[in-house]
Length: 78
Image (tube, rainbow, N blue to C red):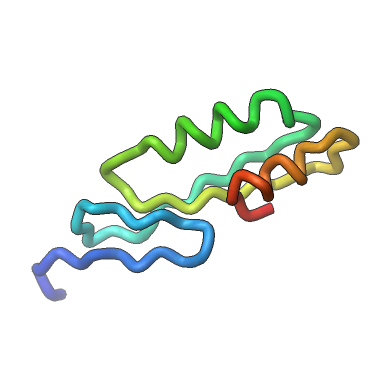
């Protein structure tokens, strides 16, 4: 195994970390149901993480509200 640190290349929906890493990108899966009101704050808190490249996936469980649209508008994979 190569001991050099490797800068991760995130996929679509990820932001690049400035910290070299030998670990894969962290995927956060948020199961939601009608959470449109709090979703923006949750996604913003996750994006503030500085030390890791993060991929956010919102798993909508059949919301009747605008949860799916809010998540997509904020750049999360739905």
